[in-house]
Image 1: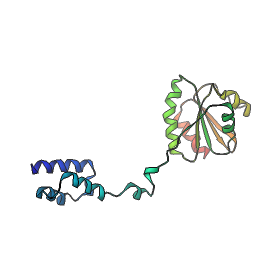
Image 2: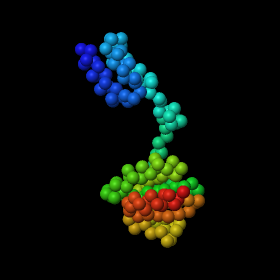
Image 3: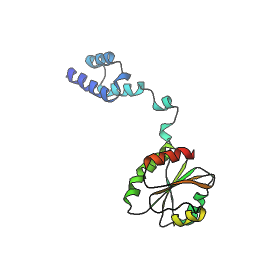
Image 4: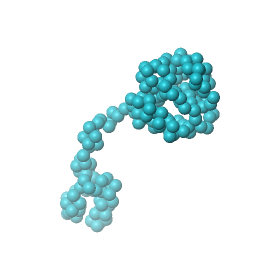
Length: 174
């Protein structure tokens, strides 16, 4: 029975970071019947450095950047002239490429907390028409369409899901 407990303990240690426990001391405790495996696991958790201390952050209250939705033309116009660094992804319902772009856009939002990220249904907010009113050189002929806004002006745009180009344009926006 003691041998089974020892093997069970070793298995649990492998799962819960074995480097944090002195294995010889722990094996002795189990062999002598001083403590149970559950107690040793709790000791292991207490010995591990807390993630908050290592990173200097409060992981329990980490902020995750969320992408906000633009639902009206007025909201779209306000964001198109925003002074903050802003990226708007225009899409349309049922668009395969727009669905493919969503997780990529979410990842960029999480990786760039200094930029505001928005999505909008391009057809409902008349995105193409409103953008053309502000800058006649930009023609949105399809979706997904990405607009890069800086200092109240549309700095750049991108049509389609081209990760390389999207990455370059986000870096250039900063």
